[in-house]
Image 1 (cartoon, chains in turn cyan, red):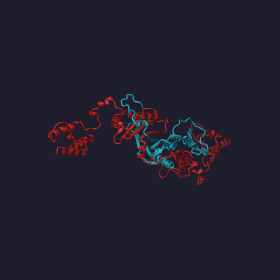
Image 2 (cartoon, rainbow over the protein chains, first blue to last red):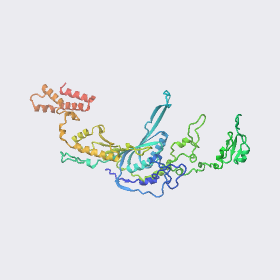
Image 3 (cartoon, rainbow over the protein chains, first blue to last red):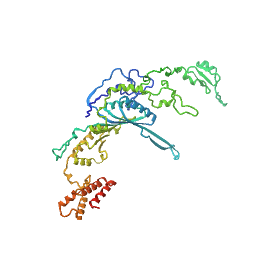
Image 4 (cartoon, each protein chain N blue to C red):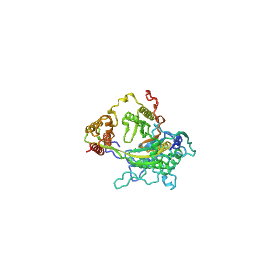
Length: 204
Length: 336
């Protein structure tokens, strides 16, 4: 009889480890020495997701506090991470990074596969006015890569996904499909009106 | 010399050396002068170097660029310190002879110094295996172990039969949010739920297309609420309501006709009447009329076989084996 006793671990310190939620732009020349948060903000950037967040991954010497709550951890039977981008070599490198990170964190990798690419082609007029016979053709290629992880707990999933998403390269988008497993809720185990079959107004 | 004569190109004039101290003649080319301030030469064929007065004293001499950092890098350096975060490619910091670009005729791809292609493409120099290991070491304390007793999918399904599926989206754009992220899909096998025959049939009627017969899975997809939490709560509510409603027997359910039935049942059907009439007329059972004869006939094995074959044919459809079975049963009943 399996009873999941894994408790959820809070992730707040993760942000500190990975440099925090900052509105930084990458400074190309300097290396942040020791301080992870540079106080310079270039402009008021909207808080776009990880694609523009490249934070320094300096490990602090002070250990971050791990809080363990009493709430039971969610269990994910399957987590499907699929990335898509215009350049397949970038996706190759990202796949290497994601699979290696999963191995290091002890996550079982189900399968890694490459769905076929989509090519969107369009034929447009070359000139602004008239010249209908002269056209120009464009195409946009979208490459995909899918990594399937199985049997992963909620805390581990949070850690792994945040790490992966913070290091998502520019021009790459990600979709994460999580399948959580749950027990049958207590109020569905037995019908309500076994004793009173002709009740009109049901209560939940 | 503005005149009707042809315009001529100006050339170096000795007087300029006295007026502008930063001017020096260039050997071999009388059309150019050398500016000592910015250490470069420029053409004076269009006139005296007054136009370049902006260079006088306003620009510092360009300092020499030193040796690139790559020359001074030891072989056993800590690469994670060189590229700790995602930064564009710096030719002077990466000690690799990388080349990128289209090779022109008879040439090679251009070198890394000043190569825009290398700067444009996202690089993973900050995510080398050493760096990944370091990061994962730091992240390990936040991870929890999967319970070892749930190692197979079958065990997971047995103890945790309800599957809730939701999707997260990460992409760059004007907004972080994606409205498709609110959709929640709840899947459960009906065999897990505590349903009796009537409740199961009623549930199937209530649910309609959301049930898949082959896999016995009921899928409830909710997207009517704006937040995922709300949609999840709604899906749970729907499941609860379906369950409890299917156990209830309403007064109007007594009006269920043959057309509403999900499965074919032989008792009371025209097929039963026909075969009974046929057998009576053939006088198979011998003498005696009424109920006893009927029961005797029914108890016969051939009639039972016929009943099974007809039920199978109606429920499963016309496949080879069911038609053959019907044929055999008919032959037996009529002793052909």
